[in-house]
Length: 596
Image (cartoon, rainbow, N blue to C red):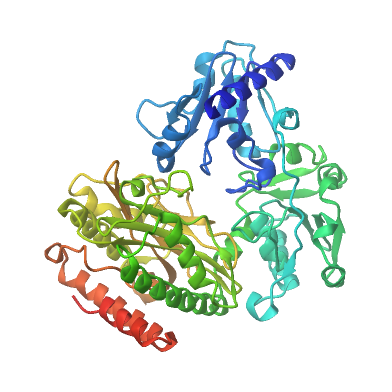
């Protein structure tokens, strides 16, 4: 029935395309702010396809419907698109064209491709327009058919915005604005357009609840050299918050007026924006005589380099997260095989332990609780319909995180629930070796994530294994669990790692139908030393939770790798034991951190 419904939706879209003289329609995943996880109001691609992964692009032509997604979602998308008219294109595999190349292959010259300009970045739209033009194909970025078919469509969220406690924020909003203005002056910029929701939340010292797991709110911002204009639904602001914003020199305007007001920016102004997040419609609305200045978000780089105070607060959140995890892992060990437990049960139990602390706010992303072969689906999320029951055997992969008032956490542990195959033990040990190699890295200033990625993969590569996702992503400060600009991956984004950046360290390996293994800690980049060859940086691990030693094939570890693991466990034990009130939890922690 679901497949028929999806096919009917695609048929309805084709009727609307014909009315608008469109030969193809591209449906993006993003909202107007380039958000990785949009609010339900913007989940049109998910509505049309039934595929709910966080990355995907749908292309509909008169005869075909195709979805592109990356390796994280190959298995999931295959299942969710089964028996529909939508063909899956596995982006990144050999001989698989990207969706723009596909359009040039199937559409004749003089065709028109439609896309909603609010949901595609200026950079992505420009590149697509240029490539299509080479084949005589036009693009119409003012297409809006969502309201005609997306029903019932949830309204835009308007939950109340809160202020970050000044003792946690570190800097006032005006101190942050002044730092940005210094950058603007150096680059001869008169207006800075902020569109990414986490950028706006960070610089304004405000947090919201408009997107699940991400404490952000829908808004735009224009920072001038003498003024700041925040475009936001006024229902989000209490009178007290509005008053303090205006006291700080913020002008408050309606969210819906942003596109129109961009035309009021004076001629000859120099307007900065990030083309990777600013949507096409708003950039096209800027006064045609203004000078556009493109670049990577300065706010993104500012917020990525955490201050010592911010890092201290984050470490405090790691301690309470570690306490909750120890309690959970002890409980799990005591109960698997003794009562019926599902993937959803254990995910909820961890939430219960975390929420015991009054600074806990929510999970930082949808928990991945994957037992056995389900863990081979990289971004697997259990559901009531297909939830696996845990048995006292095999592996459980738990990738979870929390939002605390003073920090954001993200951790993955792969846990043996009983006997584990030798193949799984070998895979587990190789993943651990990669994790340790990256954690131990020391590197010169100017090093980019792509230059370190091999450290996490080398042990796997030597036996012909690999994983399709990145090795590390930036993590926000009481903000998005996925934050740029830094990353550690096979592909280069040109961003160097800097002191204060917090990044995940999460190699893994996945065998369809068998198991999935991932070990993840968060690390902070900090100065290591300065020699005649320059300044060097290193990683310090922030996450505090035992790494299960039971699946390790000890003979595959070097002495240095054993030393790192023993030192890490010694630190975890010394830090957490005093915060555990139950003697049984303390004893479990001691046992779990014994030297190997």
